[in-house]
Amino acid sequence: LAQAISVQASHESTFVCRPSAMAPPQASPNRYEPAQMSPTSSIFQRDSFAALSFLSFGSGMRAASEHDSSDEDDHDDSDARNSDCGEPQADAGNTMRHAVEDLPGGVQEDTSELSYGGRVFVFSALSLGVQALMSYSGGATPASLPAIQAANPGLTQLEISLLGSLDKIGQVVASPFWGRALQRYPTKLLLVIGLLLNAGFSAQFGFVRSKDAMFFAKFMQGCTESQQIVWGNLWTSSRAPPHLLSMWMNLGGVAAGLGTAVGQAMAGFGNAGGLPYCFAYAAQAVGLLLLWVALVFTPNKLVDLRKGNHASVGRAATMASIPENADGSGPSVLAQLRVLMHRRLYWLTMLCVAENNFIVGGLQFFWTRFFCNGPWTLDLATVTAAGLLVQGIGMGLGIFIGPLLVNKYGGYHDDLGRFITLHLLLRITAVCTFGAGLAVLAMGIQLGSWSPNAELLDSSLRNPWLWTFWFATIPINFALAAQGGVQTVINIGSVPPGMQELAQGFTTSVQFLCGYAGGVIVPSIMLDIAYDVSLSQFGYKMTEADQLSTGVLVLCGMCVVLFFTVWLARNEAFRQWQLKSMLSEEGRRSPTAV
Image (cartoon, rainbow, N blue to C red; front, side):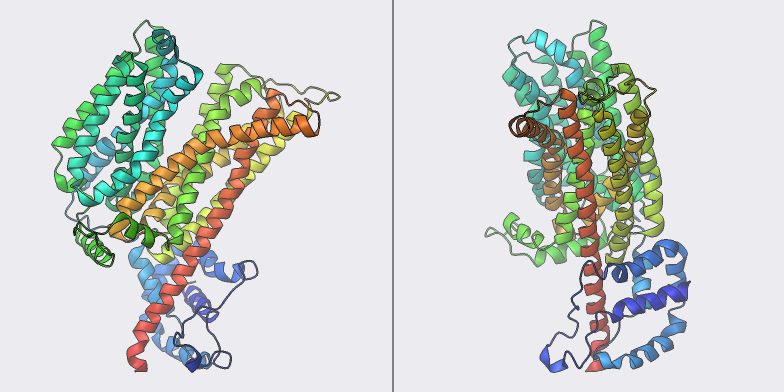
């Protein structure tokens, strides 16, 4: 099998070769110009190596690297036989060797000086713990709205909606600025200031009564939360043990979900028990202050993003190649953005992360209304229990099974690892697309019963199409949970070390703007448009079930868009791996040619 992989890798290098009769050496100084390929006609040819490595990556690639030295004569014979191409062929053994060195964790910082226990503490307390407490308000605010309205009877519906969205607006606005600050100022200093401010604004939101002060506190909560999100993703991608990297990245979503559930329970049961709504926010502020004390006594080297010899060399080399500001304070934001504009894999994986959050946020927003007032009319307790069950199963499988597959077959920071990982994610996204199609089918059949001449289907738990829809959401949640953290790691690794802080700031901003906010706003706009078009063009007044189904249909359609975006990212990763392999081969053989 190892021999087959080596031969297959050699075949992968031959299709980029231009015969000397078609491309004379003197016609172009660049002998390694990749041949043009149709993305549809040659997809199988381009994916053949990844398909083979997908079956035996863990053992085959390591075996191939061990046989490199014994196969050198065979490679030399192959080069002689292919001399008509007018250029050397890619060395499969060298490619395999680099892949083994970089996988499964890719190129990470040197963490040998950091204890494993210290990294576990920072991850569990200062990353997951802080993220859970910051997400706490996302559940406490909706549960406290009746008490807030009683204390502020003049609040309009728009102002009430702002209380639930101003923190997301703050995250969108502040994320790029925190990314830039992490480039220029000490990491721990920024974390200490940000966490203390977040605890203060959390307490302020619970105890003030002026609506303007509440709006300001909510906005600043989001601004300070975005710092932890940017830092947490960067720290985890560089400090996590390679075999646990994808698991640690995915656990961030679990912490956020648990924090939201705890906040909802604290506020809901507290208000029901006669406690003022400030009780829930006081508990949040106390928890954040305890973690702030832990952060103050944490050594700098455990939280710093700039530690590690490998990362320091890469950072210095990257920043030295970018024009500096006139005051000598380092590369400007515009100069870094010009570099990022040419990083297609960065933008594509950013879109993947945003589309993933688009679907997750939209399903959470529409879930209760869809099953209580949509095609099915169930009671609130049943809908809540079903949501926890099917989402828990799907997300649990994705969080724990997804990283196992990625760690076994793929990688993150090297070109070959990113290509194979995205190849695997493409298949996982296909599972998501299948679940979306099954959900649309169940929804369409149930909606047929709402026509005037159709028999009304049962809306109880005996309805098989209700169970079909719930079953369809399991592969959707599985695929989204399995690739969310992995896409974030690839997004970070596709950017040079010195620019990752700023790039992650922009990724976080787009993630909340086009992701969580877009998953609520875009389907709502589409269902309003569908209502107007249906009424004006067909004379049909859509029911609430029709409108809610239109919103869910938009979310299911986004699964198809996500599949296409992952496909584009996979192709871009393949192009980068192919180009880098050819340039490395040219550099290795150029002294001989001279």
